Length: 490
Image (cartoon, rainbow, N blue to C red; front, side, top):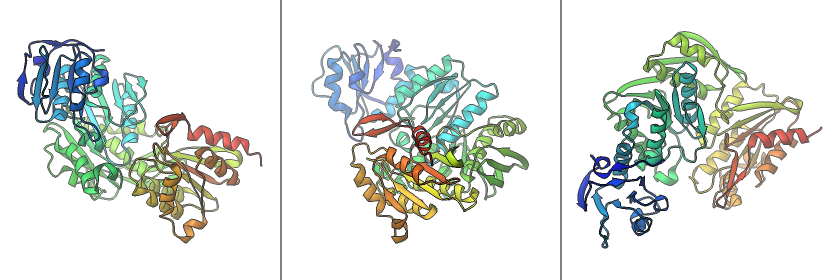
């Protein structure tokens, strides 16, 4: 809900270069999308990747905007409207949004989690841990946003700056003490986290992803690193010491650096003693525990959660007791059994590294007598370079592979599958079939599976839709797999 604020107050420290008109006026809200402008609002004209907000200043004025923040003043400036020029509207938006909502992030302990894989799991587990131990908390994740126990759907890993501050203000109003959020590389590059105050930052790992946006791996790495560069002196930076780029992340940070790892000497260390499809036996900081999560990648996630909890002052025994009871987030190595004791695993793995981690975990826990059937696709309008890698990894670690559609978005799904086929050698081609319809692909996997076999359905995890030509159609891998197994009566 919009509230009225004095323009002069919300422009404080936003980097003013030139002002035309008065600032001692009331604005009824702020917007960076001209379609959301209402009479009396402030419009911030951002220069984006595909659009330039300066092109929509006229639309914002027509909708009743009474103040405009921009990098380039328009030639026509109607009377009664204040125009504010800044050097960087993206950075200014973060400051303006924080001012407008009375700096909610200064009233919370906010932990940001970044990395290619593991962000959602770490954030979800942190939220569950702190909520479960009596701390009113909030969460912003790929799966959902939660404020004081009330969940709402999400459309982006990290929302825009205005939405972020509104969500944090809602957390403050709900009495939250902590907030845990995913920080995507896109959000850092686009300055969506500008003006936020973090108590701590976590780096999980970095592998091949999002090169469609960042152009190079170095660009992707530097976007992640910029998050830690921006942490304050009172914050902590927790990094995965086993990742070769872990310490790169904190080369220039002024935050207090801590490390976690399974192999390297670390401030927070753990060892996997036993791993099965039912869980893991771990030794964490010299204490033994059993957990229901599966795989070394989850051992890293659990260790990161443990380290954050300790850095925030929780006692180790209580944290480990809770972690021993936790369950994986929805769509993260979520498994169930169906007809003939066939095991189905649904996982969000949509990067080469994540897919390989899941397949290696299955390989470590299976007897070897089962047939492993992997159903996998790649998203459209995203990093195309990973497509052949995904197919090659699936073929290297599976007995049978079915290449299918993921979220093709605006691309031709068969073209995406052809790109994936480019990564297959002769052996991979022999064990692979392509079925464009994801529903039919899952049904085919259920048909091919015999008693005791394993089906991995990778790429979409928690998602309950499939995006095709701009439309999101209802689709749930778990539900389709269950229905497919029930239809088989062999």
